[in-house]
Length: 216
Image 1 (cartoon, rainbow, N blue to C red):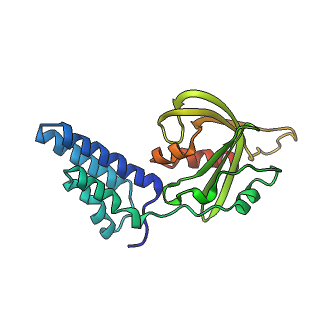
Image 2: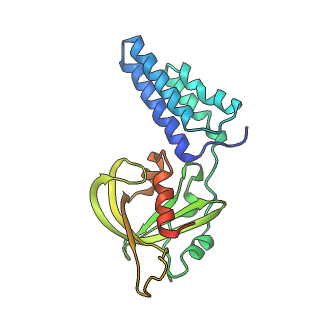
């Protein structure tokens, strides 16, 4: 099989496997375990609406797992089928943000792109946050100001983490807008993009944000 599992889909698999493993280890009632088994299997498969029969066969193995070793091997079996986020180079990143004279970048070579939905980082010195996402075969970059906050719910991964208010100016302009028109769009999101990438299970919020900021 060719790689077919994107990071957010792998997170769904991992989350459902953890739920079932916990039930197998702590619940005594077989009926309850079977109910959890059915639910986790269904939700895993639902994350792959275009899966082939061969791919479904691999995913559906969650339904027969029982021991910790089996769950571990199940998750490891997906590694050859992870569809990597395209490797981002410094040159590509600088092209995405041409107005930033001295763009401070993370260590791009150290990123494991198998487990990335987007590349994100902050520049504390300038109070700026950056996101790079791959859409329709090309990179899309968003920059904006971030205001650190305390614990909160990230709009991307929907998990309770250390968040910041990320505010970006939309490039979209209504017809007949005045020259000084602008619209800022803000959302609370994880300061640590690594944690966010481990938690994100749905692309809808990210896609909606991109559409609002950069359009099609």
